[in-house]
Length: 285
Length: 329
Image (cartoon, rainbow over all chains, first blue to last red; front, side, top):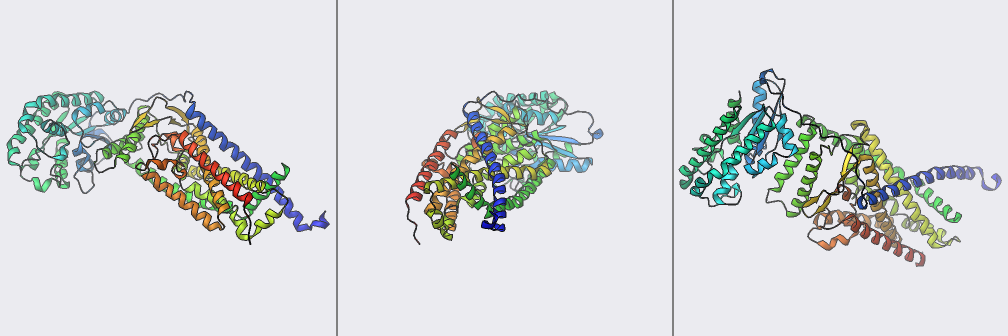
């Protein structure tokens, strides 16, 4: 045999068959695994069985309450509409929320963490009330020591123009709004009560509304009147709550609309947010 | 039978000795660490940002996507996709399940999901594209076809070899992915739950059929589906390799088709009949997770049927041409 084939050839054959044995079996096993997976996927899609038993939902981490000075770290959750989202802040720093956290950490000399910014553009108070049933909202609120919130602007705006979002502008009727303000107020009450239920110890900061239409003659006094009434109502809710406060912002914008509002003429710009943030930090410490 | 097995052995060893698989292995060993490193950076960033609270991170993804929905500048199709995503993430949050547990299995799952449209096809093409055409360009096809073996047997042996190598490539990718990412993320995660069975209908997600499986089972199912789409790609590549003389031409043709498919998938929502193209249907593993398909109404069954028909047609063409064609010069 050797004589006919030559030694090198014979060794080549030997190692080839050895390689083939390994390669053949390995790839065959791979193929079988793939076929199993493919079949399993079809079966699971078309004839699903009961799934895996899931672990119990663990209760959300709750805030401990107590004196802030004694704590090693503070947790902040923010929620509400586009003002909390930071819309209009072209620096991308995230509106007033990020600034508040940064300032608080600096002034209190301890880490202040943002649990979550749950703000959603265009959110109304009634929608927020529904959202407060979601786990994500519950968890984030339960964990917080401080809750920052803006809500209600969209409610008022939509009542005034019966539809449309607040950034769209358009015709609004202050008379209609003033008349229907009592419709919107209970929504804010629901929000306050629900948050308090989720977290008995957190300080709630409600950032008051301002009148972005102060420079329109027909809206100067009527618009500001509505805003004042709304803020007043919010203040009464905060008082009733006991651990909540309303941070006023209407005065920051009245005579300086151009300087502190962004180009959409509705949301504050970076400087506007910085001023709101200063107010909040002053109210907190 | 023994004859056929010998042919398969011959083909398998030929591919092996061309070191195609070694090159693929090398590519994997270089590329995957890059992805692992990138993923590690992402994980570190978000851990810092969310203070290691996955619930907060998940909720933040939900609010981000919800906010994107309210923008009027986003096309309607993207909104649908996001709405479905939001509902799924909400389902995870409601059941207190972390969809992105940081471990090697999760990394591998994500990698395979992303690899199915381009990376895996690229790798199988490296072998499939020159299976026949290389015999032509080197002239060995004459030697092959002058043997006393029926032509269909030769092509069948090549097909069998291709099937074996496709399986090997996918398993190797999974293994390397798991082994390398495990160094960073830890080797656990096989029994972590993941939800399957979301039914996407328009913008709504039907959760009645949703059930949990372990990530291990999910990985097996996903690999099986990835394997199927890789097989269809390689069978079509085999056909091109029979039809086209040069390996380069057959590889470029296939690669262009695959890339066109990924681009079309993004635009197919407007051109509905694109759903009958094979390259728009390659992402069948995403049906498991319930990602909205490129064209509304596409289901796993539909995509499998389309892929199956294309594959079958490619086989018929390959065998007909290969057994009949004249070999000149």
